[in-house]
Length: 130
Image 1 (cartoon, rainbow, N blue to C red):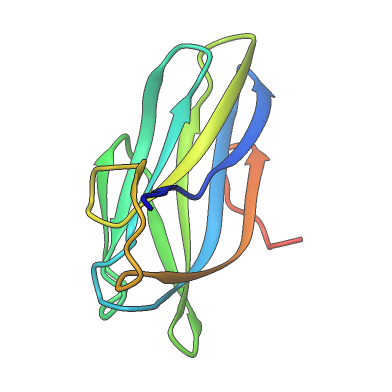
Image 2 (image 1 turned 30 degrees about the vertical axis):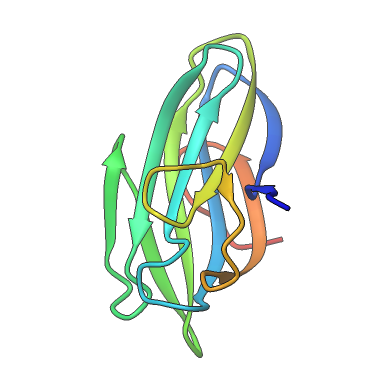
């Protein structure tokens, strides 16, 4: 049997600057499950995306600007990505990809990542996790 797999967090925000963050730790490989993207469902627009190398903590912004990673210890990184909602009220999905581009794919038990503490907040500055 085949199963489509994705990791999605949804939220609705008014037109404003936002920051999305999540704690991530390498599962299977340094570049497996390493692309996080913010997609606006209201406008069908990719707003921002980052990829992280779990071995080095280096983040590459693939769409938009302002991506960061902070070493949280024990192999965990807090990845953050800033974006601006362009509409009065928009529905967002945050996707995780195992191959660097596909956000809906057949399950692959050889690739994975540990995730914790997803947070979307208004404003352009990353604050502490609540």
